[in-house]
Every structure is written in C-alpha cells, then in structure tokens.
Image 1 (tube, helix red, strand yellow):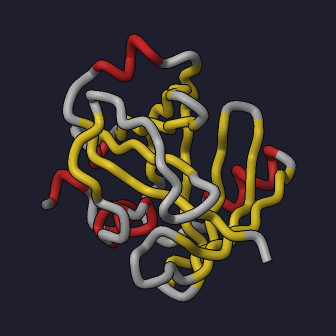
Image 2 (image 1 turned 180 degrees about the horizontal axis):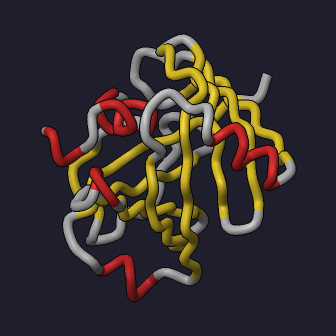
Length: 156
C-alpha cells in the first residue's frame, strides 16, 4: 500500500523565494472530502492528476495515497464536479540537504496563507530546517487543502 509520510509547517518569511528552483501554478478541487477518504483532482500546468488519500494516523504525518495522471480534458471536466471552490496556489520547490520542500503560496480566498511540506521516509527522519520554516501544523486539519476549500483562510 503506498504511504505518504509528510510534515507541514507555516512559513514565517519569504526566504524560500531566493532558494526556490521551480514555481508551478496548481488548481485542485475535491470530489470527496470525507475524512476517511479524500478524492482530489489537481491541474498542474498541462497535466492533470486524480488522487485518493486515506485517513491520517494519529500524528497526522502518515496516510495512504494513490495518484494517477489523467488526460487534462478529463481533469478539467472533473474539476467542474468538485464539492466546493477549487484551491488555487503557487508551489515553489526548494531543495534543502537531501530533502525537497514544497512551499505553497495560496491565492484567492486563501491568500495570505503560506505552508511548506516535506515528504520523509519515516515519521522521525531528521531533516535540515531552513530559517524561513515556522510553526509545525502537521495534523492540524484546518490546514488540509480539502478543508481550505470549505473554510478558506480569510474566514479564520
């Protein structure tokens, strides 16, 4: 079973911009945002993905994740069927040591929120923490993209 082990942090300054080597525009919506199973459509430039995620463990770091690329036209059609408004963001990729940080700068109703995620081999894997990394929010459901589509950051 494919597992995703991920930790999530708020970002406290724009230092990541200087360290970033790639910027992407992402739009994602949720066909199902039940806490036991989330079904997401993501448009990433000219690519589209269907992703299924399972329930997180107690710490919020580990959960089942299955993803498959689908034709862009189908992704756009499925995006129109999503439950709430899509989440839109810019994603910056930052290599730090042996790890990759994905820094999401949210747009629209989630503007002002900046979150960094890092995927790890194990929950307790050590990693280099950049100076722009802020408070850890791993497992805080309000920061899940599926929740941000229902209760955007500007409503907090």
